[in-house]
Image (tube, rainbow, N blue to C red; front, top):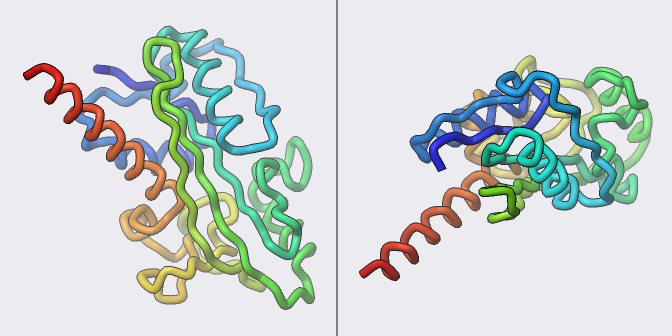
Length: 206
């Protein structure tokens, strides 16, 4: 694998994923290298299913090795919503601000504010799903937005990890967020899987 397409139309996700993939030492490109490719549908009821579908879709259309991400925010008091519908919680054309506004309205007056972010990654090589991993981050939903960094629901999500020091994802510098986030944990699992595969290949070649 010498070139990898990160298949996401979300600029926030792309800005997080590309630096995390630096240890691979390969050329990482975005969907701008494949203009005209139709957007992949997201029709599964799990993040893992959507990530797999997206990775296979873009691999078929580009002939490249592809890494696809599907992530969601699962809120306990809302029975796991918005979940796979996180990007369009306030409607198919909704932006991040509208989604956050709906979440705050749904959570108004609720005592249980527990939530978690989940991230599923699927790597497709030579047209077939090769590695699938997930990562998660537990936390709580705030009563108001805090922070200017990040994207999506970051300004409402307070990770439980002590390293966050009570800050939201949107108050954490990128490197600090990557160390504890669902996406960072999924990427670490992917890198570990690739390293383990390389070790097995070296052992078999001896």
